[in-house]
Length: 566
Image (tube, rainbow, N blue to C red; front, side, top):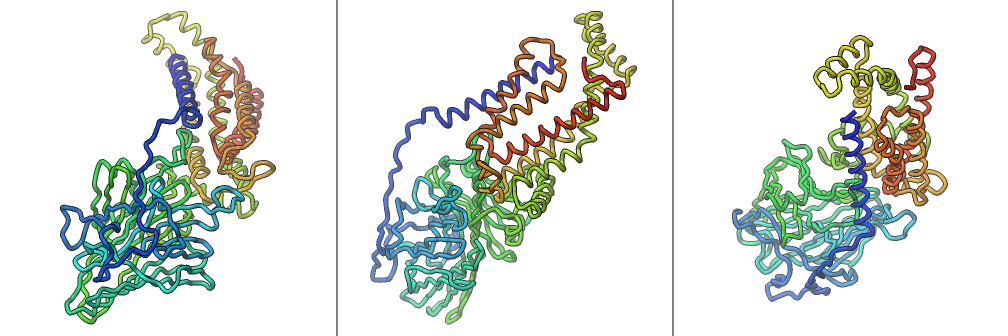
């Protein structure tokens, strides 16, 4: 009884704290913030000196002080871009059926990417912006050639590429966007971005021609640069990961959150692998050739910008010879079937936590059901019914064990009167009574513990799967990934919890605890106000099925002489 009281008090305090935190986050006073001082770069084409180099006011990769002079470990400069003027000569735009991106001709970086097929909100005209150049929300994808002769290691600044047109659009199945650069002494680089229809993968290839009078050595680098400042997204109720991740030969998937950037400096050599930045439904990742040696590195710039990327092995190109390097950039939704084909472990960015294996099978089952019913809401209902049906034997065992324990309450009360505060004798007498009555005091807990991983796994599937983003159900619920706008589902869920509570006889005699249990459905209903409609729908259907199952189980127990009431 004491343990029950403690659990109830802890549970109520936890729910109350979470509600208070969410309220403060939504409606509480916000701390004053200092405006970000932004130094905008020239919006036109940067001036070029007599040698054809970019002046030093351009952002330049900064060499690690402990790294070899030829291949830098990290490139940690941050472009100070307040707002892009995409019609200027410095930036070009590329539009495909999946991506609307902006490329900076200084360095050839992807500084903006909109996901054409994913609107910000359901029915909106503006697309979701996954890469963005403004300082407050910065997230950009940089790449280039560094090392002894790499144009991105030039002390005068990064290379200024040129292109034949200011905008490109995909008309057929593929689109190539070549950027060219050449030095005065005969080194030339063509950096080509290749796009394909219905894909979020961009191939980035370097064709290098050495017409100088000496051999040249360089290596490619690719990195993602993102602000560590808080962005709109998860909450205490729905902890959504936003941060870095990477993969190596030994570690198929490893998170590297923003706190890790501050505490340690990553430097891992591996064959293949990838580096990425993750948000709720989307991911951006650089994928090097999977059969080549790379060095994955991280750094933090000005305590505000996290940088995660890799540097490839250097190549040497002889005089009058050519060389090629390549990498791939993925920026798009966390669609598991697509990510799995791009790189090993990239599909793990759909983070189901430690119950990943169970969640995977539930997700496959959910997708299969949806392909039949053609409605994600109905698919959630069907999956919940199936899961609850499979676990019915455990539920039955749980309720029967609880009923037997309730039947022993009068005898337990007599034992308490008999032994008073002598806990040792009380425990011995209770164990003898359990043995005589053939009752397992943990019989009601074990079935519940076996069910919890299933329900938690399904919870993460419904929270993480991008397929549920903007998925329609019925009537006013047009998006299962956001909260019910009229709070109908949370209220119905609270009502179902209240009915379940009424159906199960209360063994608690303490008046305070009885009040806590009575108001628990109300607190949980408020708790569900912040949950996506898909999760609340799952909980509501589960409660309704439990009500029906409980009725059936109690009727069966009555027939067999196992009373369900005290």
